[in-house]
Length: 288
Image (cartoon, rainbow, N blue to C red; front, top):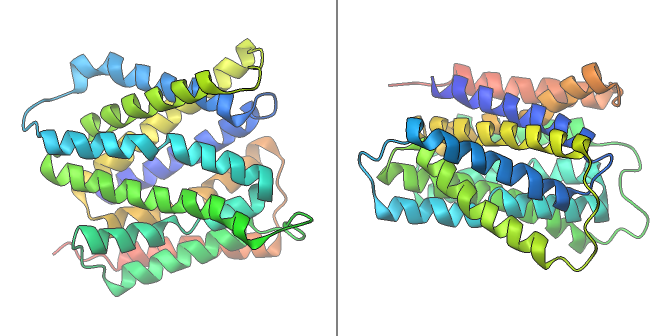
């Protein structure tokens, strides 16, 4: 069940990438985040009276969830925005695909998870597959300097730590809805404050802008909730590689719906490698 939930979470992340791509045609990422994250937060709060079960409440778990909310999803959004500015979306996607490696590493170091060899192989396969899938000829912009790779790399590290931090909280209080709601409440506060402190003039919002980013927020909120449900049921090493496969689904949907991507040989190879890595993880699972 955890594997299926993780796969569904990956689908939600992929569709959210498509809707955000459409929204970013007319609005910058920071302004979009100021719509999408509060939208998801409102949905969590509205659903709380029906979905939040306080049985087993643990204050330390709440602190873990809040700490995750300080950096995820808000800082990942801002780091990705800066990386796109400096490196472009191709390199950003390729480097961001290393997130499962950091998730497995931090889970092993801080949670004491024993990461089986097949999980490590699968994570490496997903990373390589996403890199091939994302890469394009002449992707590096003129004047490229190696240190700017720290922007997407930092985003990948944050994603990895966020999954491990959420898992740490879920071990104390196995409540995925609480993890999602608390995290989004904190992220919402951060993004609103950041938006208020911005020095540049705020763009005028259209109904189209609000709609696309509100849909993106709902999808991302659902994806995070599903990811936390999967993490409450399975180790990080099971969930992280599956979640990281969402760029493959994004590419497939983008090609079919937006017609803004062309299928190349290395992209097809990357997609095949990503699928093979996930299938390998699934078939090598030993529930016992």
